[in-house]
Length: 101
Image (cartoon, rainbow, N blue to C red):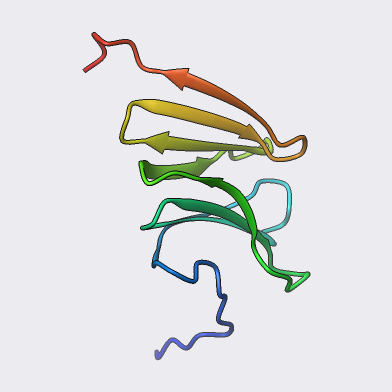
């Protein structure tokens, strides 16, 4: 079976997307992504509009979406975890204890 792209998304203009996940509760219609340059964006695939910037830091290590709640976790290389409520755009930062590593 040959695979082919059904769409091309201009998520990150200056660097490759390194992490992708879908937003819970959207039926797979909202994509969240992080790039090698450290930008984190959301994109509503139904609307077809431009991706929205959520966060930017050159220290982004990975992202992950909660399977049921509108929460996005952004982990950094500086031992920070940022939790975003995607509905309210509120952010909570958790710093790892120095003895954690």
